[in-house]
Every structure is written in structure tokens, then in C-alpha cells.
Image (cartoon, rainbow, N blue to C red):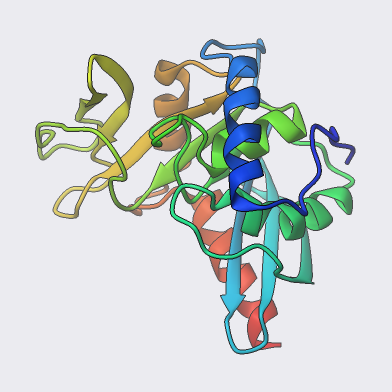
Length: 223
């Protein structure tokens, strides 16, 4: 799978902030596609002792969620941990895994934030722009914004608001468990992002593509 070279990755945190400001102009918060046939999940595990990152990417048919392909990668991490700049740590190893993919996804789910981010540039948004693919952030916790607790039923949601801007939704994907924080990455509407997350839920809190990508990255780390 090919991706865009929008900027260098070996940069300082100050340069990274400038890159985020520049890329933000490329975000599209509407559907840029007609149909979804293949979804992918992507995640990264870290080994701080070895200073390595381990990426897992898995593609599935949609809406059947039958696995098609999985690719993994490992890479030395060079960018420091800085809140809000997660993409500069994770993206290089993720792109190595995506480059090996033969099955090109229509939408990619990330275990992290999209535009629900200090500068609207979470990992899902940044990766979506580089991959030039619709992307969704589905996070376990809130980074920015305020919300009201959604109803108890599966599919209940409430807006996630930062200032005067709606940056996502708090979605109940399973009854009796905490909701997830869904935000657009890019090239997709919030309504469609929520529909895809719910369709990929298969009875669990975290949608299957992101959940299994997390397990796969952890497996690569152990091996």
C-alpha cells in the first residue's frame, strides 16, 4: 500500500507542532467515499527498555468482519514522548506495516484520537492524511472536551464538545461498560464514523479491527 510523503518524521517537537498546524488545513470532515468494503485496524505496542515500537495492521471485509490480511512491523523509536505529538512516535512504524499491505482498506480505525485533540491532529487524523484514507479515532479515554454521559443502551451517544466545536461523540458500544470516544480522523463524517464503529463492535467495547490490531501488536512485541 502506498502513502503520501507530506513531511519528514525526524524532526524536533517544535517542528512537529508546526507540521500539525500545516496539516490541519487538509482535514476533511465529510464522507469522501460511497461505499465501504474493507476496513482496517491499526495499533502500536512499545518496549521502552529496547526503545522499539511494534505495529499491527489487520484488514477485514465489511460488514462481515472476516479477516483478509495482517501485516506487522518493528522499528526503533526516535521521537520523545510528548503529549499531543503521539503520531511522531507511532507513525513511522505504522507506515512500515501499511507499506506491506496488499489489501487496501477503504477506512482505517485507530485506538486513539482523531480531531478530539488539542490541535485537532490526533493519531487517526495524522495517519489518515498521510495514508490519504478515511480514518476514525476510537479511544478508551477523553483527551479534550466535555460531554454528558450517554444512555445505557448500545448505540446511545452524546456530543463531545471542545469550546464551541463538536469534536466527536461519546458512544455506548456495550451495555454495562464505559463508553468509547469516537472522533473523525479525516475524509469522513461523524455520523458515518459512528455507524462503522458500531457495526465493527461484535459485542465488545472496542471495535474488532482496532481490538485485534492491539492484540497483534502485543504479539509481535512478545515474539
